[in-house]
Figure 1 (cartoon, rainbow, N blue to C red):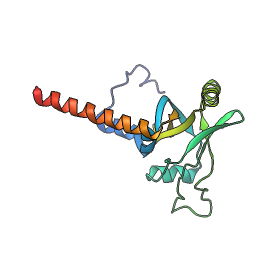
Figure 2: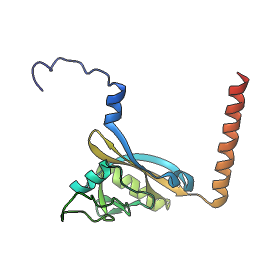
Figure 3: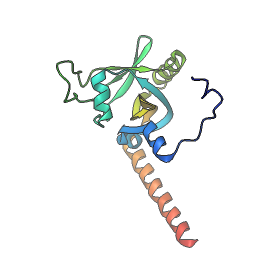
Figure 4: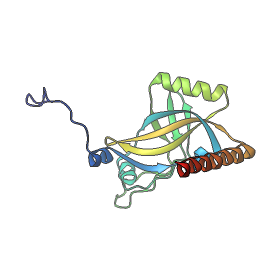
Length: 169
């Protein structure tokens, strides 16, 4: 940090600057429908150069992905990041496992809960935040078909109630 900027206060970010810091690339919409979300955590992802370029181009699919502990680290499986078209022979494998960056205590806690309660770690969304690829992981419990119908019915009734209250005011 230079001497001129040493005492300067940080100014709040403008609307356009905030959008540059955070770009959602892929969202797993089925996860919120098929699972009850118990806890959400943000993790970094170790990627190759061509994977980063493909993600920045907005090309990724995390619908079938899941995370699992292997050794002392957490890995993301079945996330599809397609090959970067402009790359040469150094392209990546689209379905390769990718290491997730979390603190050791977070890894231990998440994997212990997942194994003890028979839960799953599922990615909710993949995004770029401050030039780093991040993934939002959720500890989830699977829903039965009748649970899904109950959630949809409750959401519809809540929406109708909110609309009625808006019309009343």
